[in-house]
Each structure stands twice: as C-alpha cells, then as structure tokens.
Image 1 (tube, each protein chain N blue to C red):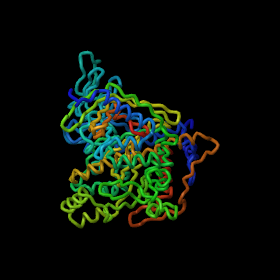
Image 2: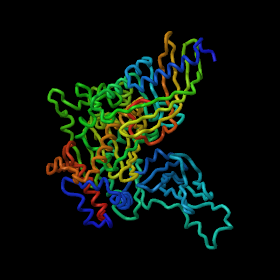
Image 3: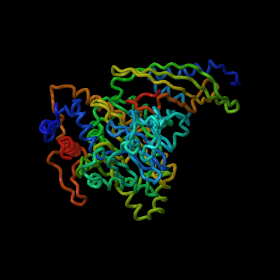
Image 4: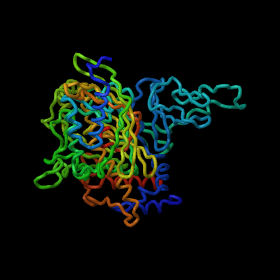
Length: 433
Length: 162
C-alpha cells in the first residue's frame, strides 16, 4: 500500500470477502483517516449537549481534535481544537462552558464562532498581522437533523441530505419515542477501548448472527437472556433449547441497506403486551397524551432494533443509546456510548433505561465485554498470513428489494450489511465518494 | 468517633475478608455479604451524585449482582477465558460516620486492585466507601461505592468487580 492507487485498494475487496490487510495494515489505516474520516459526514454530537451559548464538548473526528460549541446566535459551531498560533489544543475538558476559548500557552483567545479576539502583547505582532486570518479552523461543512450534528472535513462531496436521507427515518424512529419529540444526551457516557480495528465494532452493531454464541454467557439454560429494558419481565429468547438452535426471533429478523454504508435491523417491539412497570405504563400514558393515542400506538408498534450511520455512529433502539466509534490506530479503537433520555418521559422510565444500559454496554457490562473479547481475538487471529481472506459471504445473492421503503432487505443473520459497508469503504477509499 | 464498642480493626478485618472473597473468585459468598437491599456502585465520573440519572460502570442491586455472578460462572464467558486473577490491597481504613441507633457505619478506605489476564496486567485504584450494618456477629453491606481515580477513562473490558 505504498501509494494507495485505486487498483491496489480494489484488490482488497472481493465479492463476499475482504483481505485481512483492511484490518491490519497501518498504511491502509492512514488512507482511511484521509479518505474516509477526512471526507465522510461524521457524527459529532447532539445539540442537547450544548444547550446554552458558550456550552461546549470536545471530541475527535478521526484524529482531528474538534470543539462543538453553541455560539451566541444559537448556532452550533464545529471548530478545530488547535490554536492557530503555535498549535496547542485550546480546550482540554471533555465538556464545559466558556465565554471565550482561550489557549493555555500564550493566551490567544477566540470567540465561540472561532474568530480570534485577543492576542496578548499586541505590540509584538508583525507588521500587517491580520487577526481575521487567524480564526480557529472549522469543519467546512456541518449538518444537523433533529439534534444530531454531523460534520465533514472536506469542503466538497456528497451533500448532507444525500448522506443522511436514507436513515432519517431511523433517527425519527428514536426521537419520536420522546413524548416532547426531542432527546437529551445528558446522562453521562460509557467509554471503552480495545486492541482491534475500528471496523470490527462497526461490523458488529448489525450482526445478529453472533448473539447466541458471542453472548452465550448471558443466556440462561432456558435460552433466555436477562431483561434489558425498563418494564421487561424477562429478556429475549436467544436459543430454542429443545431444537438446540438460534431462536426464530433472531433467525427471522431482517436487515436493511439503503446506500452510503448505512444499515439497520428490525424489529423490536416496544410494547409486546407483556412489558409493564409503573414507569413504562406511565410513559405510555404520557406519550398518548402528548401525541395522541393513534400516533402513540404507531410509535409502540415494532420499531428498529439497531441502526448504523456509516462510518462512525450507531443508534440502538433496544437499550436506547448513541454509539460513536473513534479509530485510534490500525489496532486500537475507542468507543463512546451516550445513554439517551427521552424528554417528557417519566424520570423513572429514563432512569430504568440508564440503569439497564450499565449492564448491557458499560465497560463492565454483561454484553459488551464479550464483544470486546471477540474484537481482540479477531485482531490477534488476523495476524496470520496463512489465511488472507475474511469471509463475509452469508446471504450473498439472497438480498431482495424492499420497494415499500426503497431499501434492500436480507436476513439479520446474513452479512449483507457488512458487504454494504465495504461498498461504501471502497467508494471513499477509491476516491469516488 | 463512637462506634458502639467496635474497634477500627473490626471494620478493617471485614473489608479484608470481602477483598479476599473477590480475589478467590468466591462471588456468591461475596454477594452474601450484601444486605437484601444492598447495592454495589462504581461511578463513571468523579463525585457522581446519583446512579439514577447518570451512567455508571457498575450499579448492581442484588438481582443484577446475581445475574452478573451467574454469567461469571458460565462456562462460555469469553472475556473470562482465561479468567482474571486479582490481588486487592485495602488500606487507610477509617470510620467516617456512625449511626449508633441504626447500627450503621460508613467506612472509607483506599483500594488497589491489580488484575492479570491473558498476558496483560493492569491496575485499578481508588477510594471506596462501605455503608455497613452491624448485625451482631458481623456486618452486611448496605452499599459499597468505589470511586476509581480513572473512573471516566476508556476501559478495556472489566469482567470482575473491583
């Protein structure tokens, strides 16, 4: 991978299989940072994280440190967190509030729209020094949909609308569950890391094939997992123990793709008639009061299980959360998980979600820990050059159009969604995205 | 501080006993130290006020603790193949608060846990606070809270309690 020529990249992806180098080759990773994370629309944060002017969060887009900050005019700005003087990271807190963004090193101070306001000891400035030319760099393009803020580090490319269009409904699916029609990502975060490639996590979020095996330790002798949602009496049946096979609820689950590497799985029923607790019952009542019984009924009918907005985020509809995937190195990845508060829902309902997310997706959870082990072992196994190819052929040729929703449908235990991710990958990496 | 005739050593011995159960992977015996309404809490941010409106690394009541331990005993828990080995060190034990009428005591201590698993060794350290109920012969844990100094870091998988 000396030059990243398109023909060399194209050799890494074949129908139903990908070369191990996409996970292990540092040169491929460098190209991904430039061509995927330097071009694609990436999830940055949610407007609820910066409600007031001066509120900010810091994060990374690929390896670019950024600030998402609310400006006085109400706009959300995505600025590069790098002083234009000598290069220091300006804000070092993960979140906070600042009237001005002031660099620790020589005190250069920027407005919340990135404009350079103050240069201490100005008499030392070179003749003709133009403060206006020294504002913080910014993400060239920023887009927002229902509070979800995305940015592209490339001035040109597919529009935000073109990128997000096929998965707007997935965002609606979640936001509509909030009686007040809006979400809050204000319940802290889970952070975990693993010694493995970032795509191992991306591929995993829509993979229903692994559940009975990867998560065997969460399934009891009756084939049932622990309860994962507020109001659930018990968890999902994962294995039909009499037949000794994956339960029909998993075998029948569908997955969908609609371009750009995005994908999703369905269906998860919010109200199967058995789900009940004081908090959940109260939530149903409040939802019906706010949006009307008919609309509430629709919201509570089967919803999406999990959605991937390629390349760096997913929305989980079961243990509701937003997941952000951050590549660190070819064999190192960090993931942040934000619990979601449904604004307008009873506090006990949101609290139940937050508590159950601790046991499904914290670094110390029952579920995520076994996934992390699988990612680490994949990275170790992929060191072997005795077998070069990774198989992603399940369901190849079995995809079918779903004209009702303008998508392509397969089974969630198939690998169609992963193949779609590599189609998008190739598009970005080959320079055609 | 009046502690109902209980010496500091009595509290310290209990904490050492608890740590030993964890190091010996006697998780069911460990759980039995907790009161029926007992909770085990490892916050995800410093000075976290509540486990109900913010994410936590652990916040288990007895039911969740039981599920966690059943999983730790499961033969196919991949993240414990091979299992973790741990060594806890408990020090700086001090009774911080005593409610003689209820027989409830808050005991602070410092914990260092070294974990070895699959050729990797790592260190967890922090301040822990036990709310203990004296039940005549010994104590039951009403709450164990562990504030790790790196509680808001990105962790690799944590399978066993601190």
